[in-house]
Figure 1 (tube, rainbow, N blue to C red):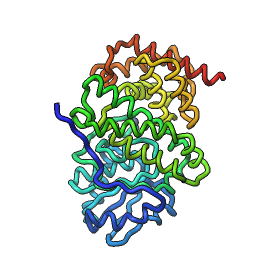
Figure 2: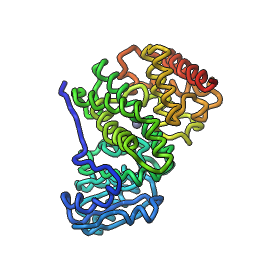
Figure 3: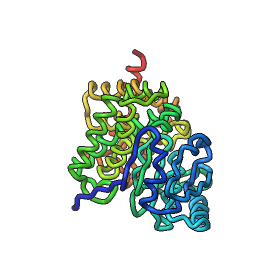
Length: 360
Ligand SMILES: [Zn+2]
């Protein structure tokens, strides 16, 4: 099997990075259209640098349905755009990504939260009109440019940043699972040495600097820990998951998402609990699981099902396990034999450890 890896074309991160939009985008075209999440404040929109390009701004609802993608494509054609940008949370980033792909235009991703590792990737999650996931769509190429303004990210609620840490934490464990089992990564090949090193670096940064970064985030003053963890959340985790592969932590996320009680929980919050389950599934020692669970608590991530909204574990457990272990699911990327009983045991063990820690 071939080794494969994919990357964003160019990555910019730091305070006032948005002011470079014009000169950076001018490498790709002269007339960008930016689809901006309606919830993005006006003062943030005003920070977008417009040198060297004729920027067209369109505010959109944060939704990524087939109809919304078609509408975005129509707008881009009407205004004669030669570059597409998406600015906001995950849904608008994905909306722009899918529209740019339909138009065969370069794409510029401008995340305003660091809640997951999706911005640098080629993955767009498509929803139906009722808000349910329709399918995962891999577009033909990763963004040509990703702009991450740390002042903007630090201005978002800290919970989003913590969620991104949860998503970033999973990257190494899942890449390692794929590496050990010989499973393919998200781009259809084996992980490169580089992807494994990036995934490891991603984990080491969030674990060593996550708590300090959260403190900086809560104070609204991004410093060096915040910048390092922001890079881990967006760039390292993005390359790490796509070029390294995914496994149990995200399968548990999918299982949790089947329980309506968890719908208020963010992607990375569910994934963070999934990491504890993944460790338990792989027979990690209690102290290893305790260490990561303590880390979760230090950055404000959940360690119990109760914190994700599930009060009746006996009812929820079979639902989570059924979805997590359905045929072809990514949990089978783990280097061990997967059975529903084993997964249920791992969830119970993770929950037990989480409850013990919470009781202390
Ligand atoms: Zn994720």
